Length: 334
Image 1 (cartoon, rainbow, N blue to C red):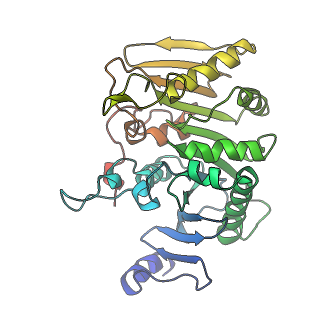
Image 2 (cartoon, helix red, strand yellow):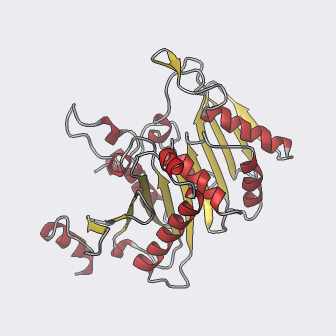
Image 3 (cartoon, one colour):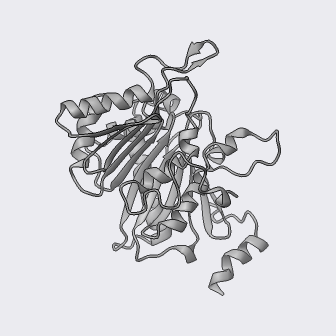
């Protein structure tokens, strides 16, 4: 009977409200639960997607992915779905983070995967950070709050449950992550991975030391940076970024900062990518070459970007998928 409960709920109570508490709503689909929260910090919206109760293994650790949204996108855009017509909004078909997380759930049985989508009312974390001068402390509070909600709601605060946080971002979502890092001093031990997908605009030299100290704190710490050379892109007759403002430049800047500090890198270049690797593979910087000035901003996500950021330097790296390959998650788009 327990195994068919999610199906009965889906058939009998579509869109069922899980809580009447102000600012919280949710519903259950076949094998996952989606709950929305508003007002955890001012001008914010958070959606948590977790496996339905029968699909959670309490003996396994939790990977909580906090995904800071790109500029101009809603949570629904970032989750993704099948396009309904030729005139449907193309934003639903450029990230597919929900389907990529489903791939991780199906193929990486080491963890319970839970994803929390972080959206600002302005649809820009850069604008939100400009509005709230205490945003570093605010973002630290939001991370701690979402972490506490997950532990309480899904695991009843059992002391045996190990929860690891992955801070992931695309585009302007990187501002959320960088401001969070400003608000915490040292990067907390519960942060397992930092995953930047063309969201490195906010990198500055002082972050290099913070990253190195964190990477040295444990063999489970991973930092993944994926970007592209965007200084060659001309849009409407103008460059889209300054010569020092793009993600490709900022990624190379961190590489130089760390190299000057004594970090030993392995460098590899081919016709498509520049790759810098250090800390026994736990630091990966991938920069897409771009001599013809194409826009790869969302393609870096679409071509299995989040999956690769979660699985690199593990035995599952490029098993069943390939970064920059065809979508491996197409059958998991709903």
